[in-house]
Structure formats: C-alpha cells, structure tokens
Image (tube, rainbow, N blue to C red; front, side, top):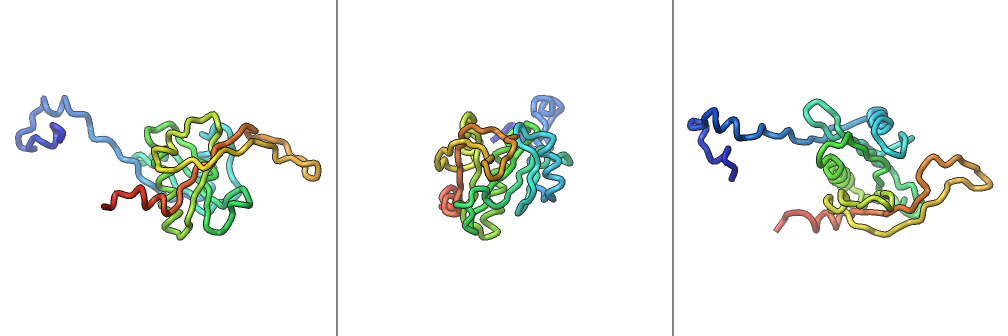
Length: 181
C-alpha cells in the first residue's frame, strides 16, 4: 500500500504532497483510420513506410496526444492467410514507456474479439523481442530475409533484407495468459 493511499485525505499535509509523485497518466486505446495511422508511421517508423490497406488500426494515447499506433491487416505471407489469422503490419511509437507492449496487447484483444484465432508479426532478427515476450506473444520461428524482386516482376527493395523472427499469439494462448483462476 502506498503512503498516499494509506493517509486519509483529511490528514494529508503539504509535506505529504511534496514527497508523493503526481499520479501517472494511463495509456488508453483510441480507434484510428488508416490515414491517421499511416501519418504516424511515416513520421516515427524506423525502417518502413505507410501501408496500403488494413483491417483496423489502434492508437495509444496519453491524454490528448497519440504516442503510438498499430496497424493490423491480412498476413503478407499467403500461407498464413487462412481467413482466421491477422498480422501486425506496422507498429510505431514516439518512445513512450510501455506503448509497444500496450499496443500489441490491444491488437491481440481486438483480433480475438472480431473472431480471428491468431495474430502474428515479424520483427528484425537483430531486435531482442522483449516487448513481444512482455505482451505474451511467443516466438514461432525465424524466416530468412529476401528480396521481393523477381526477373518476371523487378522491384526496388526499400525494406531490410535481413532475417526476421515470427511471433504469434493465438486465442488459446491469450486464454492461457489470462488471470482467471
């Protein structure tokens, strides 16, 4: 129990007010359109630009300020696009504490509320994945990086070509991580 909650408001003094930090502002989810989410991605994502489409986008707000966004769409890999799986295609924050894990959790809950059974995302192999683990996602495997360019359809690669780690949460995993007795 904190000192603030242990002291009756009638007995709080100016000294108590000085030693207690101000109450923290909580992150809250806000619905976003694709245009708003893409504008944030363009300004804050380290290595990818905006996306063409999505199923839904969610913002994380501190007060009146958007501090992060997640864009969720159909899986890019056709073998994962089974109609029951979605994918976090972009996530970016301004560096606000816990915003990434907050958004991964919100995306998974929204996905399952819509009836989807799995949600996945890829991170660069050089990234530690701590946010994924903190959010209850599990590492599925590693995929090699490669170019989208082919002789029949040449492309200019504007994305990292290094290996990626696939993380996933399933509706069963989410149940296992819930706090029900």
